[in-house]
Length: 271
Ligand code: AG3
Image (cartoon, rainbow, N blue to C red):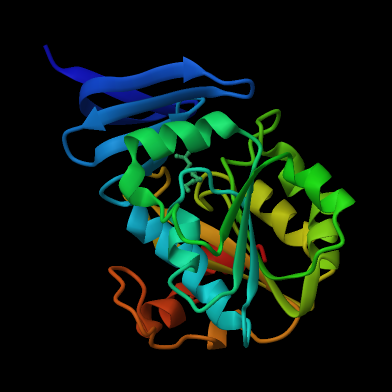
């Protein structure tokens, strides 16, 4: 009998994947963690029944989350990743000539399970990477460190979800205070088609930055067609920072970077 897994994203809408088997199922202190093996997307990591990443399409998300931000800073050396326990975001950051990457994830179980079941996602042995299991809100409140780029690779900012405090105005202010002069923040946000009001709220919460832009990309296993990212810069304009990279990519190109900032009118009108 066929085995199907569904993500019930919002009422009246679900995404389904036919799976071969469940490889891991358990609960951490913070959330339900699951890894399934699917026919079309390979291994899939789910947190609280929400698809986080899949072996086959993760490059589309991680390349678009990382490269526009790293190219927007003139010389990114110190990077902070908030969340990112599966390792995909730090892997892309480490392709750049950065000096130090700190990955701060609240849930050690996500890191352990990802390293065990999706080891090819991360570049865990790179000496420049430091992994800390901590609540990023507390971590930043207590730290005086300054970063060039801060990446938020969290779960969806759902009300009462683990990531909710990361999308508050207070946290964005704290991120701003921990960024260097030309500092850049990038975060994945929600699909604009289904969550327009929430997108607008995130946008408004970032108004301490002189430049805030939204860009989009495709991630086949995420809901709502197009997926959006929000980028805030103290210096250069992210939309004009496209560049040919010195290493191979499978989604990012300078042309895609440029096009990603072109927004359809239905999105533009609310920003
Ligand atoms: N975190 C964001 C995943 C969002 C997908 N949302 C959904 N399926 N409803 C990705 C973590 C990957 N490093």
